[in-house]
Each structure stands twice: as C-alpha cells, then as structure tokens.
Amino acid sequence: MGNAASIPASAVAGKKHDHDHSAPPKIVAVDCPKELEREPLVLNGRSLHWITDRIANVCEDDMPAWWWPAFIISAGVMGMMFSLLAYLVSTGVGVWGLNNPAAWAWDITNFVFWIGIGHAGTLISAVLFLLRQKWRTSINRSAEAMTLFAVACAGIFPVFHTGRVWFALMPGYLIPMPNFNYIWPQFRSPLLWDVFAVSTYGTVSLIFWYVGLIPDLATLRDRARNKVRGFFYGLFSLGWTGSNRHWSNYEKAYMIFAGISTPLVLSVHSIVSFDFAVSNVPGWHTTIFPPYFVAGAIFSGFGMVLTLLVPMRTLFKLEDIVTVRHIELMCKVILATGSIVGYAYGMEFFIAWYGGSPYELYAFKNRAFGPYWWAYWSMITCNVISPHFFWFKWCRSNMVFVFLASIVVNIGMWFERFVIIVTSLHRDYLPASWGYFTPTWVDAFTFIGSFGLFMTLFLLFIRYLPAIAMSEVKGVTPQADPHHPLGGAKGGHH
Image (cartoon, rainbow, N blue to C red; front, side, top):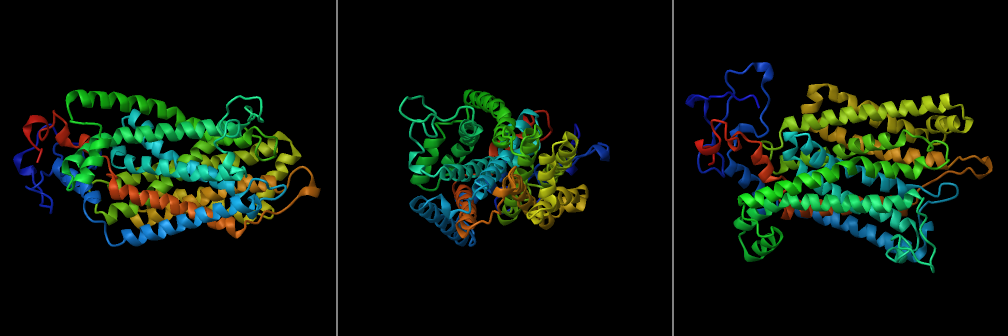
C-alpha cells in the first residue's frame, strides 16, 4: 500500500474516536515515489480494535430511527406481493398480462433481472479472492448477502409462471425424477437446466457466505450482551476459538468454495441465456448471448451493490472502511462491463445484417423503431451512455452521483431483459398473430413487491449480522503484516 520499510516515530500519529482506548496509529508513507502511493484500504490508520467495534456496533447497538419505518414499509410491500401471488394461484396466470404470442413477459423478465443482480456477490467474493484483490474485503459480505436475497426473489417468478404451483415439489414436475406415471420434464429444455443451475448457484453461494461469517459470528458471540444472542451466535459459530487449526481449516474451505463458485459466475447466467439462445425465435437465436448475459449480469450486480453500499457507509459511518477507493474501483468495473454490453448491442445489429436473414434483421429494426422503441432507447441511454461518465474521477468519487448512476444502471438492465423478451415475441414469423403486450396492475405490483422482499431480507441482515467481514478487513491492514513496522510483535494491536 505504498508504505516504507521504516517509519519514524514522528510519523505515527492519530486522532481519538469514541470507541478508542488509545489514539490509533496513523500510517504515513515515506521514502516512496508519489506515483506509487495508494490510498490505504482502511483510512486514518484505524486499529484492529476500532475495526471490530465499528462493524460489530452496527448490529449490537440499537438501530437508527430510520430502520423501523424502512423495515415496516419493506415488509408491507413484501406482504402485498405474497397476497398477489395468492390471488394469482386462486384465479389463474391470466391475471398477469401474458398473451399470445407474448407468453413470456414480465415474469421471465423479472427472473432474469434478479438472477443478474445476484452475480456481483459471487464475483466479488470468489473471483476477486482468487485474483488476490484485497479491496474486495470491505464489500464482499454485503454483496454475498445480496446474491442470496436476489436468488430468492428470482425463484418466485418462474415457479408461479408454471401455473400449478402446488405441484412444484412433486417428482416429475420441477424436480426431474424419472417415473412412468407422470410427464417427464424435458431434459433438453433450458428451463430445466435453470433448475439445476440456479439451485446449485444458490446453495454454493449460501455455504460460501456462511463459511466467511464463522469467525465474525464468534466475535459477536464473545461480545454478546444477552444470553439469547450469545446462544445463537455461539450455535452458528460452530465452536470457533481462533486456534491455528481452525484458521487453517477455514482458509482451506474458503479457498475450495471460491474455486467452486468461480465457474458458477460464468455458467449460471450462460444457462439463463440458453433459455433464449437455443430457440428459433428471431432476436434470440445467437451465440453472443452467454458472454453478453454474463457481462450484463456483472454490470447490473455491481450497480445494485453500489445502490446498497453508498447509503449504508454514510448511515452507519463506515467511510473509513468502505472508502472512496472501493467505490471508484466498483465504478471502473461498471464502466468495463457496460462497455462490453454496449459492444454486444452493436454486434447484434451487425450480425443481424451480415447473417442475411430478413426475419432476424426485422426483429432488430422492430426493437429500435417498432411499438416498443421507447423501451429500447431507454435501455441504450441507461446502459451504453450513462456508464461512460465514470471515465471522470469526479463522477466516480461523488457519492450522490454514483448512487443515482447505480439506480440508472439497474433501470437500464431491467429494460434490456424486457426488450429481449417482449420485442422478440410480440411480432413473430406470422403477422396474423402479432400482438402488443401490456402489463396488468398485478404484474406491476408483484414486481414492486419483490423489491419489498429483497429490502426486508437486507434490513434484517444488517440488523443481526456483521455487514462487513471484520476478519478479512483486518487482514489487509498494515498491523496484520508481520514484516510491517506496526505489525506482528512490534505493536499496533490496540
């Protein structure tokens, strides 16, 4: 991090904080070329004790005044969604705006949208861990939790889209168990591949998230202020003592799950894209879909991470741990993946022209200039134009701008899924069957309700679990380096 091999006593200084027992050492780089200096991942030379206090106090202290109103509103919106799903089951799938030919509409759009949101968590946790990117440590826990909550939201839509949802767990319906008395699932259908891919992705992400939580749960167990919290934190920390054997096993397990999770980053959204790519529908039948969908998923996932983290770092005063450098690096990932998505949009038009199929070319002309032109150009504005503001440092370091841009990114990615699905279906090969999809109020409020479920789960997460990985953040501080003047046996462990 640009620190020198030796630091004079006059360079070690700091300021007091409410939770400090002594002034934290301030780490100053000396004898280092300015162009090689990097902003530290924990600002102001905070001590290990301060990091524990600051993160643990978020879930140990009483929640701020805004938490209860936010939770009640989110839970109410979630309750509305479940009420509408009950209405759908009792009445029929026709309460959604599905029609012929647009038999897939908002429900599958929302499914792909939520699956994409969950991609950043696994990427930050697994891929960046294997690439030894230390900046992931302050943001991976929240991103992993976001992954799980997004997968929970995503699973609702295809299950209820099938209609007879009470059969969902029966052998031969969604669970592919061979039998001779039921209609087998079509094993060549990508819809069945989704069942395997999403369930595997959700399971591995849950285990990976939980393994990373264990050391921090033990910290909360030791700090618990009442027996109930101490019991549950102790139960889920699995008897963690911080011994050398425990750390050795923990690091091996974390590495293994990171290795297992990394292919899932590429495979899950590739398989979701096969829902479209293996069909003969103009606008879908293209080999660019798997990498294009993966880039778009990372793009939208990082957008949602910023939407959640930018307010959270301010509301809980975590600016020294989730720094402007972290935000800037995530903005750069959004810029890179947004550029890939923009390239894919252009390449789709080129291939439609170069391929010589009049149906394919018409499908893309219809996207841009047909009845849904407003959705297409909203997608282009949000996904192609808006990320390029992040070329400028001011845009990456201004938290208000980053927050608003992250919302624009997610709006654009929802429009992308809507454009791909609806504009390709509403005008197919036979003009006599052309139609126009219009969502019903049940469509709209069910989708809004899924955000209620997502936010309810996220608010409960930050209430009872450490939103930042304490043990991992401490591992990237100078005090954790035995070769650093403030590390190892030389001090710095205040």
